[in-house]
Length: 170
Image 1 (cartoon, rainbow, N blue to C red):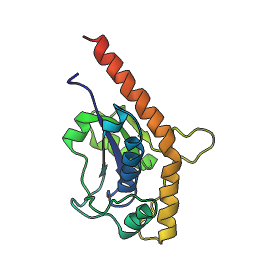
Image 2 (cartoon, rainbow, N blue to C red):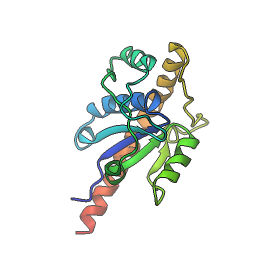
Image 3 (cartoon, rainbow, N blue to C red):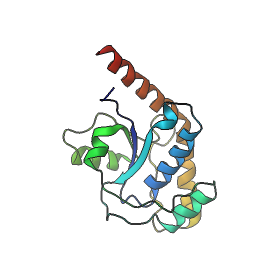
């Protein structure tokens, strides 16, 4: 099973607001799942990053309000190891999806908008709260929380399909 991809990567612009919050929320959600989902790696990165920046103070505060600590996070670019191990990339906006496709050659087929699996008439974009007040960060966090159940199901299906393919190829 050497070819199994086991990393979920959340992508935003600078990796200091939205994607660290999404990473924290999804890691928390997977911790409540059984194996193999609870063992998957969750990370985040940005498409335009100053490496090693801490998360924005309002990102930390909005996550602390739901009992999740992201204060140790440091920003990073998308790495080669992420590209190789990513089961899936989840982006915040169409622009991030386009930038990801521009930065990775060939463009990844496993990249989707974080809110694209909710269904119905849900807005698929997660607006950038950068520089805004705490209430805007909380609204951003809540739009991510709404997506988490559909992402857990999607990741479960993708992981299972990958494992089936791997065992079929043996």
